Length: 489
Image (cartoon, rainbow, N blue to C red; front, side):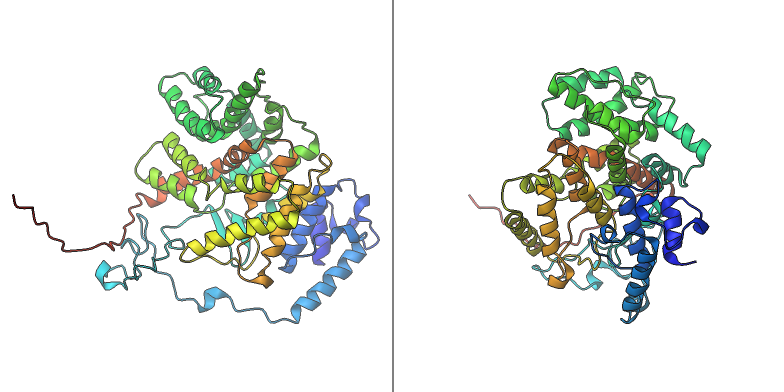
């Protein structure tokens, strides 16, 4: 079967025998802007390359799409593919139980003492950002090839085909749910949304604090309520309660700030639609799908700083409330989840997009220069394009496209042909979507956290059951053999 036909069959959920060259893409009942995004993402995955942002707009029929695909495939086949890096790279040391490469605390040789390793110069600190500290079955992140998978499913296979609730089940349970499992899972999440009264009261009293601070304190407050037997949903799995309640936490704070009554969580609504409902925002199908897309694409991204912090805490035996609090504290830092907030704040200004982009690029370059070593991403994060395309096609309020123009200008300046510069993070485009939906900027980080909690919980469980304690070591580089000579009276 031709790859275009099989792709269209998946995207349209239509038998392949019904798809002929004469079929008009936009005549299909299920066609909409997000379907176009999904189609483009699948085509790029099939071809192994990025395509022009406006490609789908210029293609009308299946026959035209097949002709384009065949022509592009022939063009790509004329270029010799680079060798697989794994075939030429030296084998990695074995990972032993308890975390750490070779169990030796960060060295290449498990049996060598720290003095036997090459000692870095004082002005050339060792790069530990790519050090392997354990094994995982949760997600695979391959920045060199621009790939991401959740428990073996390439992200392209999940976009537009599964909901956030299904991704949550996949991450914390280990498999995609069948219809009955999904129905029961959604019911439990919906039943767990309401906060214990003592936690809701505290949120109202502290509504004027920053959203990040409130979120960091509300999670351990949920733990206090559980210990005091004051949680009416205590019979529901703790992980499900946390996932369900993070949006209720920041929605309660927003309602208190605005002086309005907090709407009760609606159990009949999906996770994404309930978020819009609690925030008092429009929740038409397109907006709900945009929020769901952001949640799916931000649910997990490997052992980054926040996930690693959660794993370290889990390895010490800390309870789940503590591990997620640690993850939140790490995530809200300006070099992690908080970075997108700053980018969007700058991009929302009245400056010319190219001027704003140049300023943002300068900040990125300064940050990169301050680090001893940086990772060059050969391919763009596979989550960025679907979010960028979805944001570009969203018909929001007139004049709201300034942020996207700035981000696109930054992206163009960071193209690989201009050097090995890092791409914009997925959070930047997710924040742009939330901005277009009418969310205030201080909700961006809480929204990112609401998406990421399932991934953190999966890492916590995996660390407890498979890895154990993480006990890294630091290489001492300070002075030695100093002597103290007391002053004589």
